[in-house]
Image: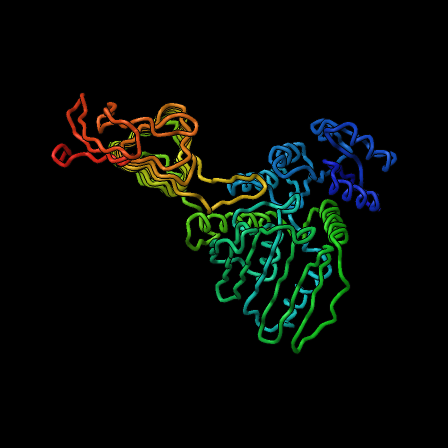
Length: 530
């Protein structure tokens, strides 16, 4: 019988399961949920257990030593920090969904407050995983050469970190345990779409100095089973082992080679979770976590961050190396307002000015003598030419290319995915939108991705561009249509818009002359500026 009293926070399916397990260990001290009806209904099954709808009031209770957070991962940041400050130990089923530096701050806070912060060890306690790890460490496979994991899943199970790199917390922890050494090199790359129903497919390669290599291939696919398919193969000099999860969330392990071992019976997620919670209770009592102390948790966090950084940068990363610090100082000849944030390498040309509260996510390239107004966001891999003017509240997404002398009016909108779905991400499949030299886009216009705006075209205020725009064309409306043509200087040309017409005319303001055939307008060579 446990003398520790633990509160379960969040009473969804996972919270209810955790409460049942802790109640069976005589360790359940309180239930907490912001929804009173859920709290009361669940409380009926646990007689004598404290019910609390206010999380901060729960943390003030002296008879609660620890909290098990089963709320959505996006809520964990503030909840973990509050619990550590209140002197409570914290159990999670996955690392916090936070940047590495914020995660490091949480680990340091736990050490400072002498509290336990355990995250992500559930799968580690499955009997099949225990058997596989024991065999690897006893030398049953000989010297490990290679570890290969393949994971198909429709969406990250609740509590897992939805890492873009495809390397989930559970898989990363398992690979680290098998490698039994810190990874010295991490390389993640996308491999494209496997089929019309598949989304992001990535490969993450982990290498240890003088040790084995581990490759994880992860793909998000149409529903395969409750949590998708997972298979891991360990290869060594003396034999091989295979771990597999079936459609019923049971883990099986099979050993082959000279050192054959009987496979343990299939295990369920409930068994692994019960063992994980039992380890947490023991650690709370002894104050000595045997599996996941601060260094191990930070190492796991560092690996996940390295996998994502490698995917972003397209190059191998050393997890132990500090990520490049965001550039806060302006390059020579560039003006950055003090509120501008640079995140990653930003190649910015001399004479460019960037104003209040703008954010640049490198790598990206910006030319000379550009101007960016307030609250402009420029994402990774964007290329912008010289003398580009971008007014307030414009976001320039990955896939957008702005050539020289482009003008973007205030609050105009670019997109980069034609069929966006929150539940079906298409990161890395961005459509290219190219805005040719001298084009002007009016205030509040929207440019739907995948289209080309011709040189010196003019998009009217509030227009919605759903097709390519010809050179010099004046377009407006929803959807935007060719309503006339504009000169190099911006004045309207005396042209019609009929597709079968041929005309020649000059600009009343600057004198440049043009010919038109349908929607194709060409400036006469004699009037082109040098």
